[in-house]
Image 1: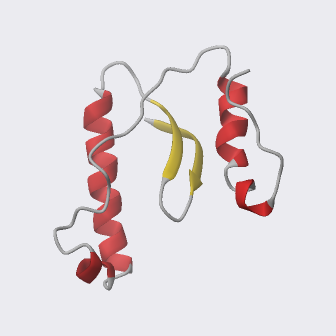
Image 2: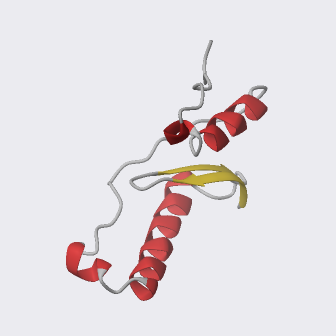
Length: 94
């Protein structure tokens, strides 16, 4: 699994991954969410009080395949950081 683009916001994460066909996307997402939650609890122990059931992430996630518009989607993900800085919104779809 290869990370192609990532943008972390206060309440969500945009992530573009390249997942080989031999891996189920649901397995990859479960692994990522689990490992990241454990690392967050290790680095920020105070989060354990807020998320006492250790449910940091929402149950769902969005999955889409990327083809010819990969560069546009990468720009959209990267743009999320600028969104709060009054930048003109990039459009994912025309």
